[in-house]
Amino acid sequence: MITLKSPREIEAMARAGRIVAGTLTRMREIIRPGLSTEDLDAAAEGFIRSHDGATPSFKGLYGFPKTLCTSIDVEIVHGIPSSRRVLSEGSIVSVDVGVQLEGLHADSATTLAVGTISPEAERLLSVTQQCLAAGIAQARVGNHVGDIGHAVQKVAEAAGYGVVRELVGHGIGTRFHEEPQVPNYGSPKRGPRLLEGMTLAIEPMITLGSPATKTLGDKWTVVTADGSLSAHFEHTVAITANGPRILTAA
Ligand code: MG
Ligand code: MG
Image 1 (tube, rainbow, N blue to C red):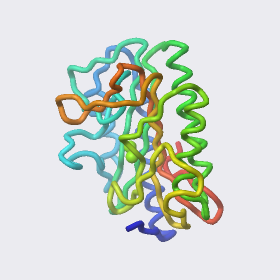
Image 2: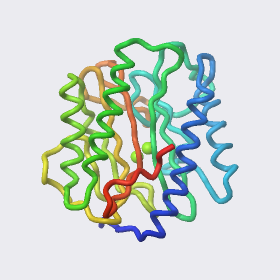
Image 3: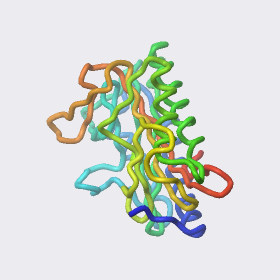
Image 4: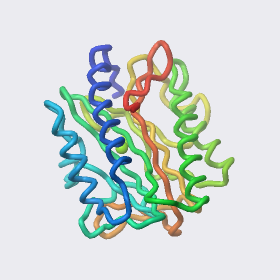
């Protein structure tokens, strides 16, 4: 069932979203070669819990042990922060975070550069952000979920990149993952119709090579099957009468 949120609920999600955005800003400020993904996680958890009533959404969700998902280079999503994973110059890291406040969730991800990265990686990050922007632009009353995916796919494939299909965006609200699923591919006017009050996490996962994935032995980390670089950007968006409203904007 797709739930529609009241204006009051959307404002609460926006408050959670501001903490999410603040967390990602903090990550951008501190990221550098030599830092471990556990260091990022500890800083993120401390930042979130410094806000009254806010808790990390991921911790304990389906048994996930940490506040962040940190996914380096060929890792697409769901990497587990660890003191053994130390960031190196030239890497890219997807940092994904959710915050619960007043019983409602917000979810966002960004892919950060560690030091100076290759022109290829720069372009992948830039195109994946364009994919997210194109998807968000379609999050309008009267459109369908397929319009979002179609817009993301068009930008990615025009750049020659792969669109991950096994993982998708999602509705979000009192539960972290709600209906509908929001794929990053699709056809215009297909899928559920978008209604005022729907809140969606839109999250393109884009690869330099083939979009095929595999899951590592830790049962969490999803990587590209061909070892190509991957990027991931995400915002939580409310469908309003005035168009898409990004709830996790900095
Ligand atoms: Mg996320
Ligand atoms: Mg999400």
